[in-house]
Image (cartoon, rainbow, N blue to C red; front, side, top):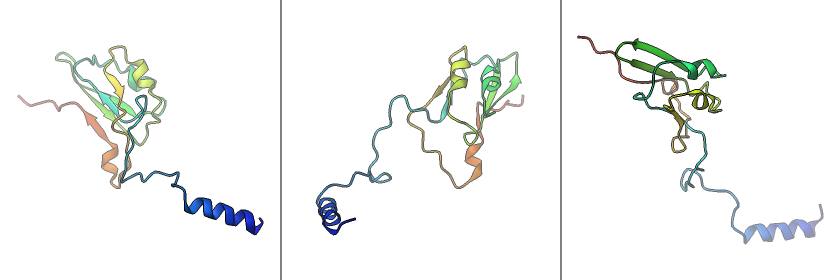
Amino acid sequence: MKFGTMLGDLTISLFSQPSTERYPFERSEAPERLRGMLIWHPEDCIGCGLCAKDCPAGALDVIVLDKESKKYQLRYYPDRCTFCAQCVYSCRQGCLEMSNEIWELAALDRSMFDIIFGDCLENG
């Protein structure tokens, strides 16, 4: 590399704005079609388990608490999820969706990667 071209590049870099973003401090809005964290709407769920069956990564488990009163839980493993949205397409009831607002999924604790949606079965 010639010294003249290097000096020219250096002066351009000194007087121009950086092309990178200051991410943690300045956040841009996420795209509308971004596939982030899975959201489950239990009022529409019938507990068929198609979402868990069609998930290629095995990131979902449907737990049937009481079939008569239609109480179900959905266990979601975000660390296994490939965010392909196959579970959303497979759900006939439309009770699953991918959030475009919750997408920062890094954590230091492994307990964040085992999420159980739904209430526990009450005694009595």
